[in-house]
Length: 173
Image (tube, rainbow, N blue to C red):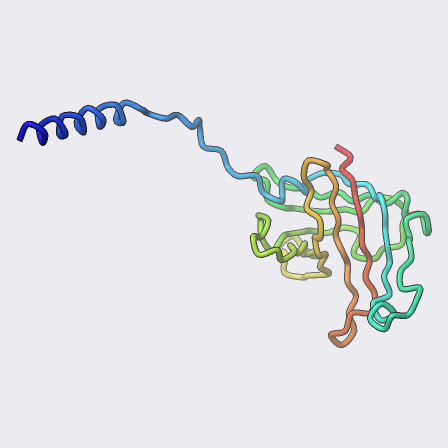
């Protein structure tokens, strides 16, 4: 009986110390979304065009750098978000041939990086209600500490890809 009372006393004392340990983790903050990482002005570092048919059939050359051709060295894109960090408009700056609509509205299929490794899709829209989709950009490299981003524009005919454009960008801000 004496051993039982000692054990109960020790257990009671340990609960007293556990109850007093109030850990303060700070205030809750919203997690950083991909929208926040994409927000801002981006300049082109590299633009590569890939002939998907040639690549699939091992025909060389199957790719070409376009970065210094057709004024693409002046290519910039601006992705905007509202005060709640939700996507609003985008605009391509620079006198370059348009590969997709030079201005409009944008959204992502997910606001966080996917654990399954699937790429995020930037959907481009002609209207603010985001009901008239004009294109899709596959986000192949998410901006991080190096402030670089990469996305791919794929052109398809009858479900078969025939050309893709890979934009490698760096943040201006």
